Length: 333
Ligand SMILES: Nc1ncnc2c1ncn2[C@@H]1O[C@H](COP(=O)(O)OC(=O)[C@@H](N)Cc2c[nH]c3ccccc23)[C@@H](O)[C@H]1O
Image (tube, rainbow, N blue to C red; front, side, top):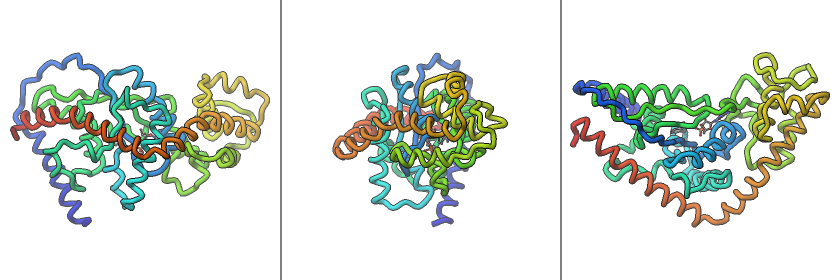
């Protein structure tokens, strides 16, 4: 299996290299393209504060600001590590419920399941080789001619590859793909509560490091109470020298919708032990309505499945002409 995957991965890279070696085409001036927003999230695990503040919250805003917005539940990406099929199936629906509860509105954006939105003729490419992580991510984005990709800082490296691939393709075949830009929020890297030098992550083995949006109030309080700070009791925002407390201030400001300076001003005279509970309360308050909405949505499996079906059909419709155009440009059609 590993060998087979490696061979497929090599084939995939050769295919991309072959694309780059195509005939030099005269550059066509880039059109003033309409913005198309695209982003994705892995279905494995419940979204955490980092996913929420670094990505999902801005996704909700962007669907109000732009006409063409797609959000993908990237199930193909999640199988780069072993997954139990029954659990994966459930996790896809759980992620759908979580995104809807956070405010993703299928009337305003296309919410779809990555594996279900491949165009019919593309089916033969569903091998692990083509799914090699960053290449698959590039395919996700370019397949819809996306212009803007709202992500956290950890995705910037992947985005650089996507930009390179788009530029190389355009150089050979004429301006076809917009070179997609990242949209980063001020919360582009929410730090682990246990180690402010690391990002908050779903897979952190220290359960106290990561606050999930469905955590109980007690769990949230416990995690913030144990958050790593330093020996200075004052609350200040100095990310370079006081990573722990600054992470708390940044989280607090983001969930309360206040500027950092205001949050620091309001906590004057408070020590960090007391402040941790204030931040925990703000997070509990922010997540409470989302948590109860998730519970409601999870009871209606048919609705969740329908949302994904409709979204996947719409995504497929957008992808098909792009895929055909690429095939024509390359000479496959
Ligand atoms: N601690 C953190 N602070 C701030 N932001 C964070 C933090 N942790 C996670 N994020 C952001 O959450 C989004 C989803 O994360 P994933 O790991 O599922 O995200 C991933 O694993 C992607 N490879 C999924 C993907 C597949 N295809 C795509 C195409 C476009 C954009 C994204 C994708 C991401 O925006 C991520 O940056």
